[in-house]
Image (cartoon, rainbow, N blue to C red):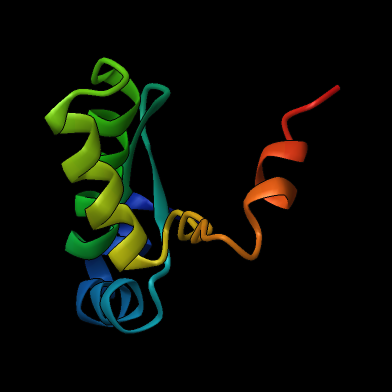
Length: 97
């Protein structure tokens, strides 16, 4: 995350927005009177919205499942391991204490 002041951001808005879009940077903009703003890419915003949906949805709900699938496709969450006859015991043993 890069921190810039409001004047620099205003004077260099094109370069700053290119940095956000092209390099997936997050820019923190300090402003007068202890105010601040954050600039993020639309992609990162979509990830945050899906993550919020995923964490707030009840366990086992369709909303949680849809959000989880989309987050896996985006590479935000790891894929669930495939369980089959060859790794059934190994999969369940990971939950034993």
